[in-house]
Length: 579
Image (tube, rainbow, N blue to C red; front, top):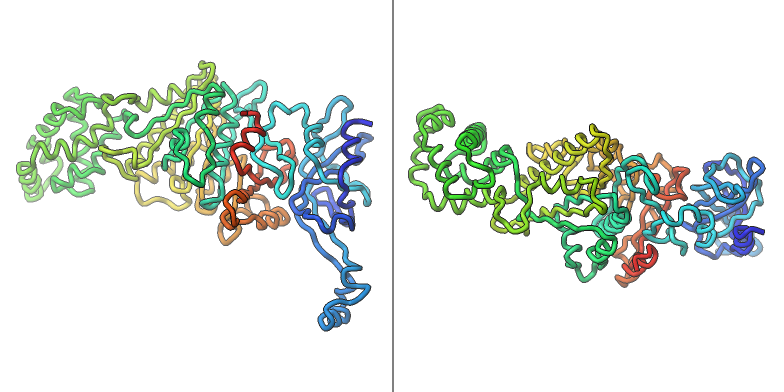
């Protein structure tokens, strides 16, 4: 008898296949010895013969029903209402029925197990057993070095095997990029899950990871700044062990490198506001003329923070021809000239010009231009490509002009740079093999159009990127608190999805239902997720997720899988041989 048959004969039996059953869903008759067990979410296992070969199927139990046909009779129900219990009927004639969705089938080819399908329904009475980790390991022996674990099967003990393949070709490669989505309310564990998935991809030397971090969460974790209740994963230490070069760039380390960016940021600043030019066409004209004149005067972007550059700017604004271009009416032009003459040159330089110009200066320790940074990430000739984190949080912008609009402009510059280089590499028959992680995606690519032009441009860039970059080997991971408000085109392009707690009501639930194709049993199981913060003890919190897509060797049938993420860093590190 083979190893798997030995394990099968010793596995705990919980039921048999009942009627009616189909290849998409099996009805189970639960054995009397198992009715007192917690079965919902359990990974179950059975063997059957198909095409003359032994096959083994695995799936999760999604629902348990209790039936007592005697008590469904109106007369007996009335009697039970009066007496509470009816001897010989209550509890004695109960039957427990289960629903099981098969997610993976393997055929025994003698020397190996091959993926197959459930092409027939096994006979009624076929025993259903609880799957164990040993059984799963035997079935997936060929893929052991590809398996990665984020947690255990929901409501069960075995670890759920997942795989995160790099986007290139060759061993362990998917041959194409995947777009990934992680959704859940605040506190659902999605950020920690994203960091664990990032480490799964960081195992591959040939793969780069580029993280756009609007809130600075990834950057804080890399530097060891974890809250008291945080999942204190030593990202820096693990990445160092993997040989990854970690590059963290904050706003002060980024050198903006486009004149159009300078024009946009100057427009948003207080510079022209203090000279009586409100936001509108006149201010736009003033910014464009100033940039044009500075370029013609051979002023370099990186030198804008110097007093010489500012003096040239001041000289341009005092030019009467320039003033006439900004304002056509004599009255408005006179007001502008008056404000210009009364203004303190020193005050304007220090308070309104320099905070903007410093964003373009190279005279900062460790500063690097966006172009250089992107080229460094995309250098596919490196033996071990880096993990790059761009911290765009406001607290890192001390001394610089920074707000949400400027953040949007910088993100747009990053997106355009990534997409341009991806297209350029593709034309040269190169595959980028890079994952871009975007936190707070619902703020950057909402379903509704932004009134702010700068934020709207980010939204458009992201939508265009997910449509086009997959074939370049550039994949995107979107982390979002909401599902219904994220742009539909982005959701449609996602190949792998993770859903944490908090999407079981209202429009969120409707969006979830649409994504997984109305699988009612899967939705019912998702609705059993508990709020992690409802636990009495923080150490007992359970962070449960439903996942859809080609992320597990047990999900090639396309069925959703459910798991509970590891609760401590030690469990995660040990399961994936990081320690």
